[in-house]
Length: 176
Image (tube, rainbow, N blue to C red; front, side, top):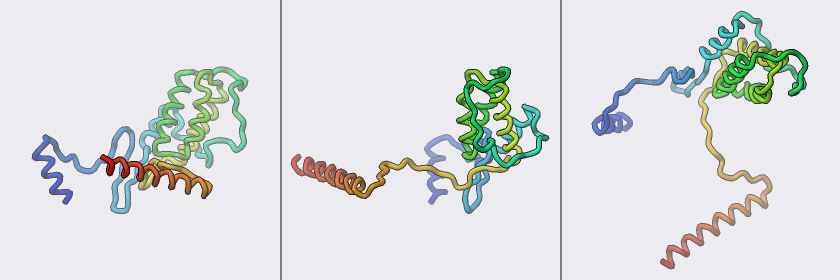
């Protein structure tokens, strides 16, 4: 069925089969019968190499537990271009690494005036990445949920509203 569809598409449109995708927008895609694994291993290594951190000893967490980071941290100012580039890279890594989402969003709050303390916390996150460079996502998909209802009365209300809308549509159709 799929081959027949592809043959019809090739006759109607000028196209060629490039086989299975393996690398796209710094994402490595490994397809298997049981699912798809997406990672950014090479991109993570490139970030580590760019900041000369590829030989650091890995740590188990991206941030120190219960450490408070504020906008007014003492210390010298960090290089704005280096900090913004690093945070942008971390944010892009979150496409396949949801474990980095909190750290990236926290550090992005300080992009206006980063201090050396903020840069140090960002580098700690890179040290964590060094130990988890092979992480990625397996069989990933998402679907927008149309309605989220928690109490049962709310569920009944939403169901009744949907039934009412359908009956009004049917009434309009029958009237026409």
